[in-house]
Image (tube, rainbow, N blue to C red; front, side, top):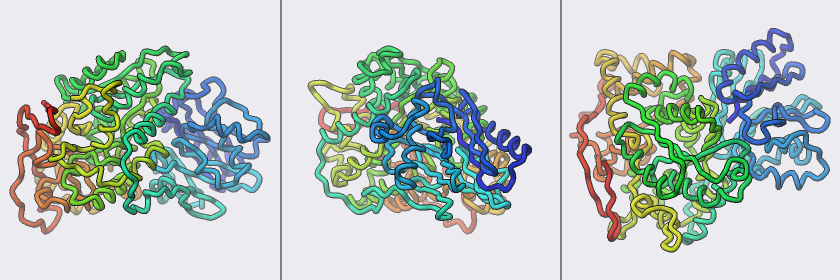
Length: 594
């Protein structure tokens, strides 16, 4: 992923302003260490920090149309760019960059071309003919983007908060699936897929249709001119990504350039569940597998850097981002610039363990819709910024536009978890790839219980960081939490610890408002907490908070008296973890976790 920064209509075209824009753009250099570019037209500035994945030799940005009256700075990948070029027969392209089509599409279709793009993107386009501009973000928010407003009437667009937080009076997250138009003077939603309304779909489940849709989503993400690999945790989602990639890599341009040996990467504490499962998958697929180990202390030492880069104080995001941040640095050191990852599946298929308690198909479907709409604040943010911190790009095929439409059109009755029928979480996805003749994965992996990334790297990671926070946040500090942090008041010492670090880096009110809040159990939305009364006493984003579901769940907590203020709220932490457990999820199939 690249880094973009645009300053538009600042009423200042001085050299000093140009120097300031360059200074702020350098804050994003980690996202794009390969080249920097700045285009100025009057009091409008478009800057770019490039991570070269497609056409490294000539695709530097900003990009232009033929006569350079339209300039674009882009962060993203346009997977159908070759098809779009064929439709633009009257246009001449300056580069082989996949993003080069954007300026030319604007010439042909004005502001109505965005839904033609198949990919992930954030961009700012400046039309110098009338000094108008548009900015847009992909439908799900896979790429990160923020918008801010200056006292001088300027509008700022940046890939990360740190590019604009010191110079804007107010700033906020740029909403996914939206366009900002200077002609309109505001936002317009350009993406409105069928599932967005949360109406209950009724399409019958067809495993082969689902399989083909996901294979296509993975295959299109093999578009690269640089070395790449797959992130492999040994869970269902990343294992399917690795299996499909290994199956279809031969014959691609990437294979001709870099060979057919697929590289896979995993991170964890020594002896963690993910390391063991990932090794089994790598051996099965024949990948060149790389294991990276970290200690709890390594993770604790990295937390400040992690929060600076991912720009959130959300507990579950920080827990999961830390091992991913450490792994990304190791991957980049091997010369790899792009990885394919498994984010998004749990939101689409109801894969989190709390979905076991979904009362009916209507609530399950509506919860998946809410989870997808919020992805840009959680897993997309983590995957994008944890990797971009080291100049590494993460691609997420589960969030492919066409695949989501197929998966979300399935009658949600098929997604309901029914243990008595052998249907565990994400059964429709597991069944789609359960091929006896040409198996994609070993059965024990295909039907492995969901393990959240921050848990799968080793349960000691979360327990260790909780203990560290308890040593650094006193009971007295917690008593005053509601006064120190009236918005999204931290209710645990771990949350308070993260919040202190975040506020040091990003002290503005707009920054704290950009982070979501609310009760959660095992990554649920606040609405889904209502599904089980017992969860109210075990609010923790770890999958182990899904009492009665996770094989190594926390011990249930007794009911607590209602809190009269944030000062009365305390965390419920159990340090002991049950040992090895076994559960039968379908006939003849045992899932073992450690």
